[in-house]
Amino acid sequence: MTGFVADPPHAEQKTLLSRRGFLLGSAAAAGGLALYSGEFARHEISIVARDVALTRLPGAFQGYRIAQISDIHFDEYSEPAFVRRVVGQVNQLAPDLVLLTGDYISNTPRGHDFAYGAIFRCADLLRELACPLRFAAMGNHDSILGAPNIREALATASIPLLVNQHVPIERAGERLWLAAVADPLSNMPDLRAAVPANPDGPVLLLCHVPDYADYVVAHPRGALVDLMLAGHSHGGQVRLPIVGPLHRVDGGKKYVQGFFRLGQMQLYVNRGIGTVGLPFRLNCPPEITLFTLQLAEV
Image 1 (spheres, one colour):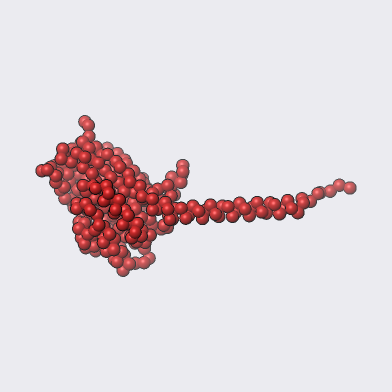
Image 2 (tube, rainbow, N blue to C red):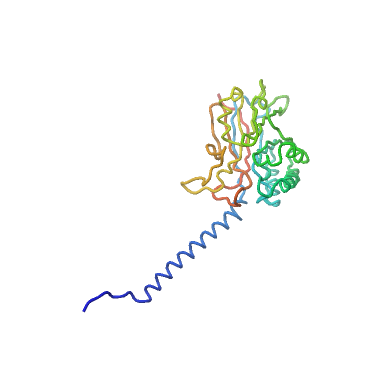
């Protein structure tokens, strides 16, 4: 008499244990990745050094060093000790100019009162920047308070906020021009007001939102802009091998991180310091950028 032979009980038990082990191992791996992304990767500051060649660079600005900080998002997840460490690393770089490209706070359900306190606490830390020459632009999250409140707070740290404005940066009788527009996602940028009509030197434009660069190059004043500095995208914040960023934000879908050339204008997108949504970064460390200006070879 023939029939089916049942698997031994221990074989079924072994299969169940293997599945359980796989699930436990997967959970442990996911937990470890979350711990690394949340506690380690988002605090691993990367200093990115870039030479920037400008065709109209005056001789006095050859080798001029500019540090960019963006997207601090204090202090939803960016702790005071972390921001103080960022400031300390900028001070070690000893730049000639420090530029901040928006989102000092986060527009979260905590609301206006929390954000108002956070911007003053953030400014108190930024006051420790050793470089006396520093300027700031608005970000979309900063709109929860509006430019007057952001300007008031940053003024306590001697950081002028530029909104649809320009100022000359002078050195040994020569100039470059610093311009900044209002945040394109939350306000009305005015490029004509921001960019000087007849600059006697290179123009550096601060704009929080990188994809605004396409509008800049199409604008009559765009031909006057040599370098645009942006943030906003956080570089994608979580980037997977091959796949790239898991999420691209409005205004940062096309230009996500790094250097781009758009005709005569150069664009740099800083990955930012802080995080939004979740306190995670992966393959996308917080960034301080240090630019060294060089005269372009014709």
